[in-house]
Length: 105
Image (cartoon, rainbow, N blue to C red; front, side, top):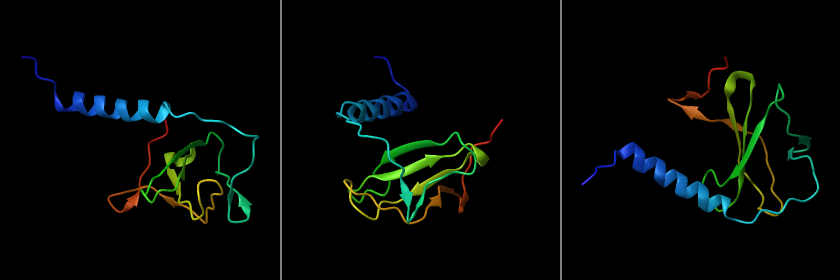
């Protein structure tokens, strides 16, 4: 019998989760600026990578924004509801009690 390493099983599991997420029908409306309080969300240098997911598992979609500058991930928790999200500030993803970052080369 062939044994599958734990990492391979983990990758299969993550792939199944991604496929389930991708299978949902997404309908895009007209472009609008997303606000943090009263100001549009803006990162210090372009190349922002947004992702919408229920980060804190409270049933509401939150906004994650990867930023090129310093390779950090901003986490905007949704204080409103999915149909009318409200963001009030952000925190950076933490690792070991410090802001996590991916080195920029």
